[in-house]
Image (cartoon, rainbow over all chains, first blue to last red; front, side, top):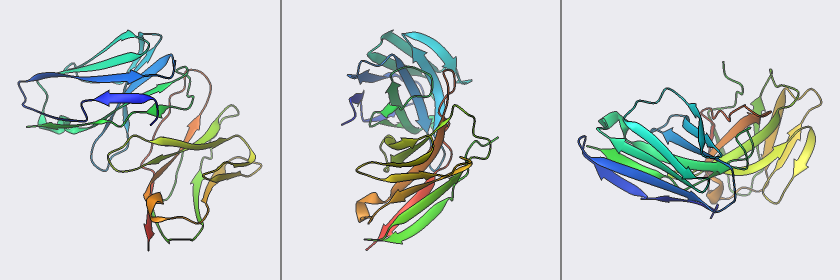
Length: 113
Length: 110
């Protein structure tokens, strides 16, 4: 248990669906992250939030829309995804956004049909 | 340009000591060397971090030579449950982001 929870753990959606991934951290951290991990590929950093402000967007397609309503919660809204978006989506948090130790959630395994 | 280089895979047997070496020739003065462990379908988990010389915790040891251009993660007496991917990263000053490479896939056999 890392203090970072993610829901749902598994998700299957069609290309026309709209769904949201949720992440919550109970560590009092100021920074939160979304990563994508495709099969046998390195983790890809998608978004970084620091004190609820987005500080990095690594050229992620607009069909992925993050939301950070407060420093404890992070969402990833999904719409009109493609099959190649199927992956493990990981949320992480750290005290600040400057390369400190990150604590990861268990991830959401997403399958797009 | 990759910041760290480590072997793609390693095999070991239960009870052996495993040493995974990471090269980071362009390490910056303010970079810390950090190792994470990842099991299948789980998020990476922090193992150990060091700046120079040797660091030891209840899980592993980290050896860093004086020039800091490489580091070695040492896992004493591995068990089957240590089968995982191990990532070596450099964590620097504010503004730097952790960059995960492909890691080293360790397979521990009975």
